[in-house]
Length: 227
Image (cartoon, rainbow, N blue to C red):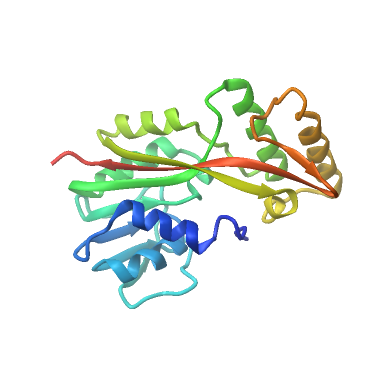
């Protein structure tokens, strides 16, 4: 999978690690993004990374394990921190994955998810996800922050902290990794420009010269598994 420079930005990744505040003794499970495994590794005892995404730089304390996030057949109560980065919206059953993440987290440990979020307003959320599916038909759809929180609560987790940041995007950078034909790309561009006046998308779309700029939001959620 080709990852955009915005998503792979080391500053964004390390900001998440700082937000989580891992301890040196922590054992971490990275459910889906090797970039997080590499960022946590210098600050914790060990990291297990699901091998569906291989870390570009693999530290000695990072172990790759072949596993499907939807099954996550690892021992229960095994990790101090279980984290999933911006690949979360690619999961076909995120509610199940959050429950699996909670199962393998030790009592008192933390489950962390960071992902781009959809608008809380349903019309805007549908518009945002329509654009994403046109860009990449394998895209199941973004969740709103309230939906993500509900999944955490269903899994018996207590949400302890949330941070939301703007994520500036540029049209061609955003297309990276998608599977759109030239005709589909032009259709997406027209939809974006057409949404500006009525603000249908909630993405702060700004046509600039020969491209389009817009702003998504990315949320980080840290929840605790009750002891």
